[in-house]
Amino acid sequence: MSALYSVVSGVSFYVPEKIVTNEDLTRVMDTTDTWIQERTGIRERRIADVNTSTSDLGTLAARKVLEKCGKTPRDLDLLVAATLSPDYYFPGIGVQMQNALGASCIPALDVRGQCSGFAWSIATADALLRTGNYRCALVVGAEIHSRVIEFSNRGRNVSVLFGDGAGAMLLERGKENEPPTSHNKVRGVIDSLMGCDGSGAEFLAVKRPGTARGFKEFISPEEAEKKAYLPYMEGQQVFRHAVTRMLEAAQTILKRNGLKAQDIDLVIPHQANIRINETVREKLELAPEKVFNTIERYGNTTAATLPIGMTEAEERGILKPGALVLTLAFGSGFTWGANLIRW
Ligand code: ACO
Image (cartoon, rainbow, N blue to C red; front, side, top):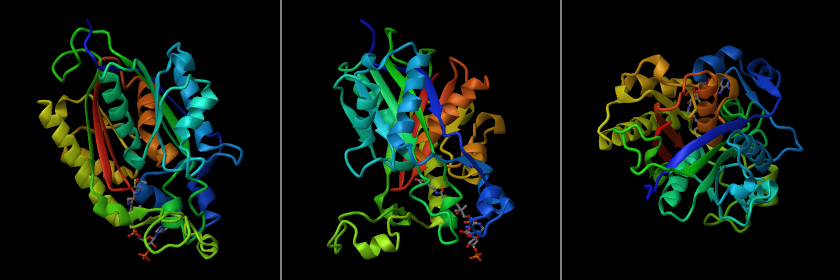
């Protein structure tokens, strides 16, 4: 009998066609291409049109990965979706994608890990596949940030950072007799790590609408008028914690699998800021070509950054079957995560 574990069968992404450059942003707020590039590494991002929802982007990415793997939605028995910008406050995008894809009445979970959402979703799907109750899981990360941020001077510290997009991964039960480990060549998810420190929640949050103490209404007309539903972010706090936690996550998952950073073939990190990723890379003493970044062209697409990075790295021939991959993520919460995968 084969061991219970999961293998990445394929990964794809979908981004809207419309490109918004830094130069375009200078026309609606006081900013410059130089400021954005030097502070973040971003040159451009994609923006969805008004007739496209987050679950639509996720569904488009999902269809691409299913086609790539020669599967149909009816082959799925589990869907795990991550987003912080769902179509509706409830239900989540998981159920909407189940319906849009025409999948059977499978469980469709929404994972609320923000920028760690995709790493947490891989961890969740892998754990459920290891129970033996599921065989084929679709993991999706999708975001439409452009409708939850403000393209104006007031919102410029946040809005220049984010972009819209979606990515999808197919995880299937592996067929080998032994599960993947850091020291054999079996393809599959070796290990995942998830962590959070909720004392950081106040540094990056959308607090309204909500049910927090002292608020009589989900969102009052006055709050709506003041756009209280826009994100609040203390950028330097987020930056500092991101470096610390991504580094810790890498060191912990490496150590417990008997690895050194140099054993990893490719790190696919979350894309919040190129300077965060460069700092983590330097502290891990990794060569630049061992860390794959896409922030320049897509900005921060939150739950979609990892599958976008994996797909582009594959398409450019940088990520090949058999490679030892480490994902690293950090997000609002604060949350963090890592996955160790034999590709
Ligand atoms: N264009 C021009 N100037 C700007 C802009 C802008 N878009 N935004 C802010 N500024 C100004 C500020 O007003 C400030 O001006 P002042 O000195 O006159 O007061 C100046 O630039 C410096 O601002 P800082 O906030 O100190 O700049 P910093 O170097 O910290 O960079 C940044 C800001 C890019 C946001 C950085 O802190 C960062 O990337 N932090 C991490 C944020 C992040 O990763 N968020 C996503 C997390 S993941 C998730 O779950 C969503």
